[in-house]
Image 1 (cartoon, rainbow, N blue to C red):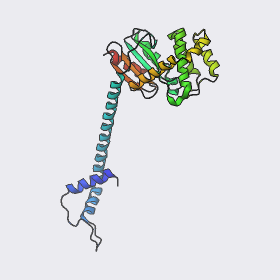
Image 2 (spheres, rainbow, N blue to C red; image 1 turned 60 degrees about the horizontal axis):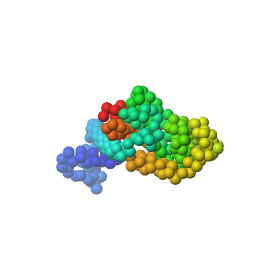
Image 3 (cartoon, one colour; image 1 turned 120 degrees about the horizontal axis):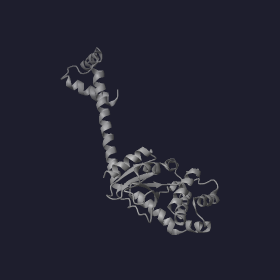
Image 4 (tube, rainbow, N blue to C red; image 1 turned 90 degrees about the horizontal axis):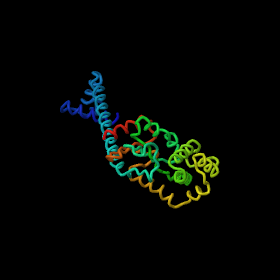
Length: 271
């Protein structure tokens, strides 16, 4: 008998009032009053009904506790999301209207398989908002994806420095298409990285390589990583949808469908 059933039985027996001969007669082995009561309840169906009600109440309590836990988690995420730095068109990589009311800020790892799946989703989500929303890419290379994840971020930033944000997003898109993910990088190694960079618009490959070794670029990526962590991001992709006028923000975790981002954009625009 499980704990719920046992507790119910105790309550039912107590409700029945004082009983005499509570234990079976040791000499005759005749059933005790409690045994008789249980048998009567079993025969009438009252015991099963009481157990069912108890299980239902327990399930309802668990569901309510889960709901409250999720609400608290959402509240904490919303509070943390306010810590995301404001979008700076001179610092951030922005896709779409630079002056958009809302930004979909994506903290991403170029070696994350979920990010690869999610790569085109933010752009799809903002497409229907007539320039009121844009996409901002920030780096969040996860430690267990090794140096190649950081290296990919460095090259992406250097492509952007040399050829602009349009080239940056082209490089990022091609990297996601070509990478084997999980720290394995591009099959063709450095030679293929340069090819992808040139396809995105880079002209000076030697300068690109030098830029990717620059400590300032490494620091920029680390700053993005720290910003994401302050903002409650603990995995990739992590998205913060921010109203650039009011600062109202909400956090979304994981590779969600475009519809989820669209709902978030509408909610933040309303504020």
